Image 1 (cartoon, rainbow, N blue to C red):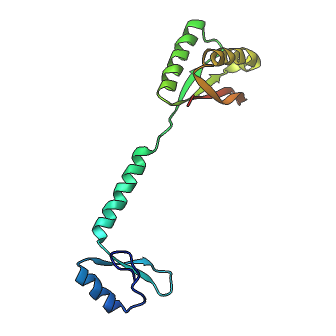
Image 2 (image 1 turned 120 degrees about the vertical axis):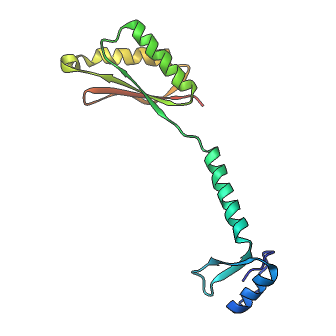
Image 3 (image 1 turned 45 degrees about the vertical axis):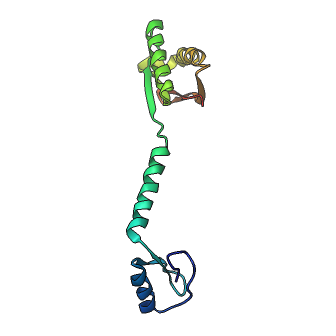
Length: 152
């Protein structure tokens, strides 16, 4: 058994431990049930639970959530539309989000993947100073995918 100051009291009976806790006006809490004999501690259990919940809230506040935004393109996307898409990608990167850039090939467009790769290279060149490449452009089925992440 451990008292409310954290000092061990030794092995004592349950009734005696409950008397110690009652005298202190606190609760008797089983800390380690698997130990032989089980370890108990005298503490304010409500205060202990409150501190645990506060620690959990602080941990949630400090963690950062990374979202993955997606921009979809086609090989026939014109220059002005491409500049607009690049502006959107820059905005997402400023918000510290990763961006998945998908180039969709429909029908016979799949035979001209080099056109899509050129567009992906243009995007990569336009974003070179604002992001790092998470995944280089690669063909997955009928889609070419590239993932970029914001610089730290």
